[in-house]
Image 1 (cartoon, rainbow, N blue to C red):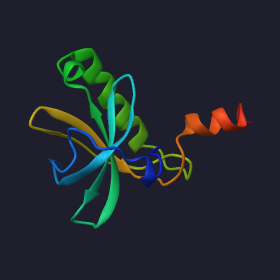
Image 2: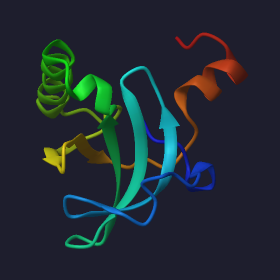
Image 3: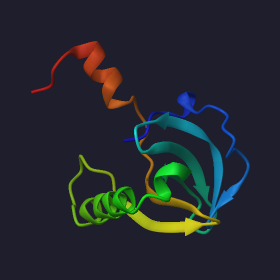
Image 4: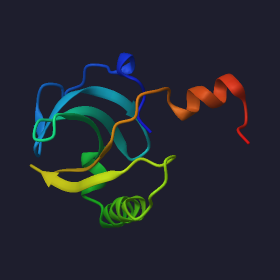
Length: 117
């Protein structure tokens, strides 16, 4: 899900903490918010944080969708799907902490190779 390390860009979150995670930078944006690369100091590993935009966090329908997505992904166990570690809120910032996977974004692979089988 998360792009490789060389695609990490500075963000307004860089250097700050979200829950127990230290944010390193931004790795992507989407319709629901931003994806950040962060460090989990307790387990000394990189994680991806999917952060819901502040505007959407105030909308009950979007919050329900965000939580459903987190719960659905957390129930899956497959090598092609990232693991969800935590769903949390820190200072009105709602996020999903998940496995950080080195590599290219799926959109870049599809642009390069076309439709996948």
